[in-house]
Structure formats: structure tokens, C-alpha cells
Length: 301
Image 1 (cartoon, rainbow, N blue to C red):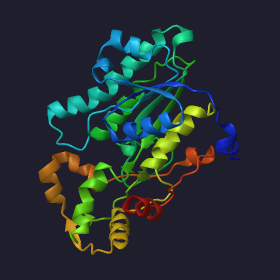
Image 2: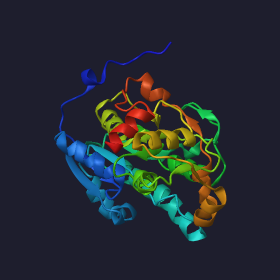
Image 3: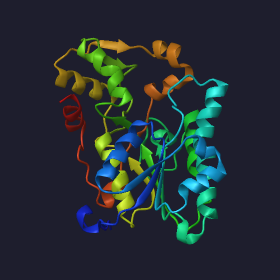
């Protein structure tokens, strides 16, 4: 039997917290920091260099209540040997260092919560997954995400840990929207490849709200799929965006063109898993934009 927790409002606390966030230049971190500041929390940024300097990181995290680790080198780029090393290192080494510092801090100066970003790329493509799924891909991205999550395994058990496996983030200033909106407005939009590949997405407002919800709800722990409850394909995304913009979407981005630009990384655009946020819904999180239509309407408006 599924037991639902009380509504979000009834489980929130009013305590002002000291919260440290990595990846401050990223889209999620910048939006999240603003939301948390508006709620009255004391926000500090974890400098990128500090993630690789134990002494500086120790100073940064001492006395912090919550650490939110969002830093990581972009995955959608050509996977040269150098780039692959940086993609992996920026996630695993930085996470291990954060965990090491938290574990070494005295209990009274140690963060009580660690929230770590992850990705739905861990799942095998074209299959359906909830958080209980162990059907993981062995491709490069899957290997990265598995190592990324494993990097926090040694965290002291007294510290609450939440891992969010995040899908494609959509918002007015998200890179995805900024890249494709001019093309669609010009009437040159269209599906990518076959268009039948799943498109697990989530609105930026729901990303920041879910993290905020996790911070303030002490019952929340473990792994959560942070994706929209509505499962769609790339073609459905293309058609809905074109409909809202009142533009045609008759063109197609061929697979070979993507492979010329991104190499093997083109697989990120050509295949994806079907992902469902079972645990978020089970524990009472409510999506503000629970489907593609409401998400794109807000973004385009």
C-alpha cells in the first residue's frame, strides 16, 4: 500500500538555513539560489576550484546546514579522451571531496543534508524506469552516472542524502530552449532523427521546487527521478512547440548531421529512456507544470 505524506505546506519548517551550492554558473543553480534567497536562507557558492582543494572546501562547508552539489562539465560535447576525462572527473572527484570534508567535520559543524544532482542517462534507453529500476546502460553516460552516484556512498550515515536523477530541463533561459526557439520561430523546426525516441523533460520551476521541497522535508532521502510525470516522444515535443508558436515543423534533423557535430555524444539526442517520477509523487510532491502543454505555454508566454 502506498502511504502519502501530508501536503507540502504542512511539513515545511520555517528555520533559516545556511546553504552552500556548487555549479553557481549553471542554469539550475542560478535559479535555485534565487528561490532560496527569497525564502530567507543564507546562500553561499562553492567555488569550482574549492571543489578540488580540501582545505578551502573544509572552510567553505564548516557550519553549513545543507550542501547542494550541481557542478559538472557539460556532457553534450564531442567525447574526446580529454573531454571524457573531464566529464567524469568533474562529477566523481568533486563529489568524493565533498563527502570527505563532510565526514571529517565535527558533528556540530557538519551539514545535516547533502543533495546531489544525477541524470536519467543512467537508465537503458527506450525502456521504462522508476527509481526501483536497475536496468542501467553500459554506454559512456551510464558509466559516468553510476560512478557519479557511487562517489557519495561513503557519506556518514548521520547525514541525510538525496540524489535527483534529472531529465532535460526546460525554461525560458535553458540551453535547449535558447538553441531551438529561433529555429522554430523561423518555421524551420522539426523532429530529431526518427522522432520516436522518448523525451524525459522537466520544467525549471519544478526542478528548483523539488530541491527546495527536499531541503525542508526531513522524510525525503535516497534517489528520486526528477522528470515530468507525462511521458512524451521527441515528435510530440516538436509538434506541441510548433503548435504554440503557430509555425510549421516539417523539417527533420538527420542522424548523420548530429553525429558530424557531436560524434558519439549524438546518442544523447537520438535515444533516451522512459522515466517516471514515482517516488516524488508517492511522497506528495506536486508538479506546477505536470505536462508538456503547461510547461511550453509558460516558457513561450
